[in-house]
Image (cartoon, rainbow, N blue to C red; front, side, top):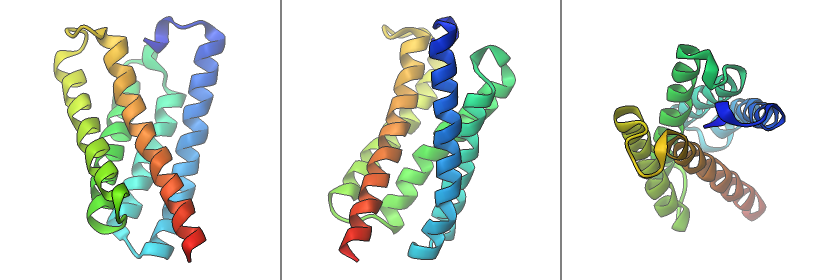
Length: 150
């Protein structure tokens, strides 16, 4: 996992998580303003705070990392499903459902099976992170395209 990576790689990953989480938390109020979706705004903001926590509390910090990661990745999965139900249209609705469900399933597998998969604990942990971040990036692209259409 990230705990066994070189220190420079850890610093880049942790810094990226802090910046990404802060960006998510900063964007959340704008979602409310544009889409009038309190639930999406709240879930997205809380998930962003969790992502910040993942960067601030790396794997070796134990329970603090576990709490932050749970908030971040369950939050992102739920945000994807809420966005699919309330905000996004067209193909992005299907992408949101697929990535939201995949994120939550991967998180449950990680929480229950851990390293007992061919991917190992680090590989499964990366899947959880990549699925969530893939949706955040796709959602950001969708929002940029929607802004252009207005």
